[in-house]
Length: 87
Image 1 (cartoon, rainbow, N blue to C red):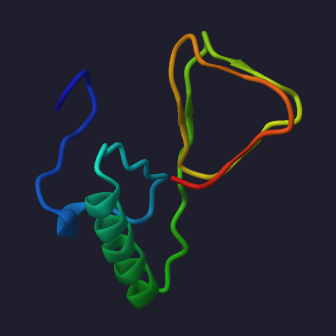
Image 2: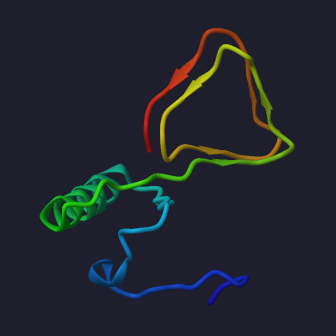
C-alpha cells in the first residue's frame, strides 16, 4: 500500500465494483487502460463508477461542469462557463 491505499499490480487485478480514478500523465496509455477497463466491465455486465478528485484548496466557479474521473489539484482556480471532460 501507498499512504494507506492498496496498490495492485496488473490491470486484470483492478476491481470493477468500486469507484476508480486513472491518474496517468500519458494520454495514449490512459486511453488504452480506460478501454481495457471498459471492456472488462462490459463483459461482466458492470457499469464503471469514476471518482473525481478535487483538492479542498482549489477554487471552482459555480457554473463549472466537471466530467467524471477528473482531477483538480491544489491552488487551481477555474471560473466562468467552463466544461472539463471526463478523465
